[in-house]
Length: 506
Ligand SMILES: Cc1cc2nc3c(=O)[nH]c(=O)nc-3n(C[C@H](O)[C@H](O)[C@H](O)COP(=O)(O)OP(=O)(O)OC[C@H]3O[C@@H](n4cnc5c(N)ncnc54)[C@H](O)[C@@H]3O)c2cc1C
Image 1 (tube, rainbow, N blue to C red):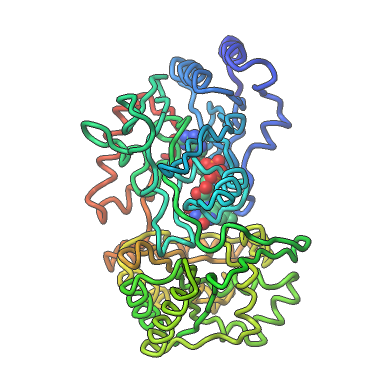
Image 2: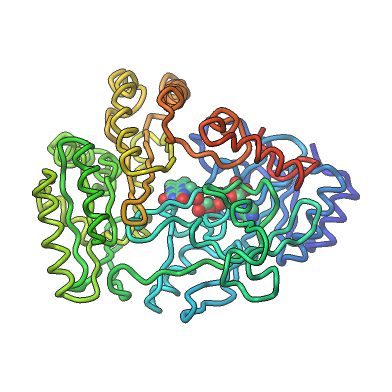
């Protein structure tokens, strides 16, 4: 299907000939970027690259008047950033890539959608500042992460996730009206998410983000945090052997292995209570080994040569302090807690890898290694609740996953989940990561079955294990576990987007 001539010409008149295309080779190159995603995608009718909020506004008005669905995107690594039905245009926001302001005093930055982590992170770090940078990779959009999808990251133990740091927001609604929220609504600046009257941050982002289902967000302010560790990072080497070192007596990484997830839980809670540590996470053992190796052969050699056991239940702890005295204090407490909870230091040969890769944002430049095992990978669950609840969910994975790992449907790594506490253990996030051979049709089918088993397990046990974000089949199934949020989101969506054109996912 293609756009009516007059519609295409109207869109072209807004952005200019150079920034719109309906050429087949351009559209098919923008169909879907992750081939293992088992959904069917349509080719969009056009791709439009606006350069300003005003252009976005005009484009959305044309879409709304003509009943054309739109999907905003930046890097497009999310499965929800492509056309899933006929009559859809893609709105690519990468041209709107200005860091409008970095305010070091009040600790916020104002950014446009096309600003990538690789742009913002180094700018902040050299000022001694940081933010909740997702491990999606340097090319991911900061704004998309803060407003529209997910928001967890590896350093949230002594901070929180991106929804907590979203401040003022400017959004173009599907009918072209511009909404400005928080302090921005009263022209008081970008610093606060809530202005006089009801706060709209929950509506814009909630916990997870709604994948552009209420409109296109064109500018946001985010709250900044101080750097964990030294602001100067030494990097070098050539990919894939590059390193990132935080050289300072005030930055140290320890990795402990545990017998059981309940012991990890106890350790996490105690570390949180003591308010020590910059990063604390129970990490996935499969990606850890993959990232430590440069080929499939090397991986199998290490995995079967002791890494699987050495990292079976690993807790990574990064201590980043203001002084050496504080470091000595944190180390003392940490080792006492490990003594009490049974955490054993992993062999130094493995642990030292973290010394050169502790900056998780940088680690992701190694994340492609994770795809080496046959190309199929998928995160499942991604929910949050208390540390105790997350660890109970982690334990329950063993109740069903062996039907998949023992039969070769997915890679045999049953404990391949991560749990990241946040806000010093007042909350935590879980992610179960599965890898499979995407050329094996039986494995592809197995993934579908695994997702259903995982969800049914959560529903039966009333586990808050999976996130609800956008209005889709997942949200409909899980809504009853979360105060019927699906009914509320449906009403909000109908009120803001009565024609259902903003990234419809049902
Ligand atoms: C390898 C990998 C690792 C990842 N790790 C993490 C992680 O550690 N933490 C985490 O939180 N997420 C992670 N993700 C998930 C996700 O990709 C991120 O949340 C990411 O930041 C989204 O940014 P993007 O540039 O990829 O956005 P896109 O894929 O381009 O967009 C994401 C969604 O937001 C919508 N959207 C984009 N821009 C706008 C806008 N301006 N207004 C309204 N809606 C918009 C899109 O329609 C889409 O539904 C990971 C993904 C991959 C592939």
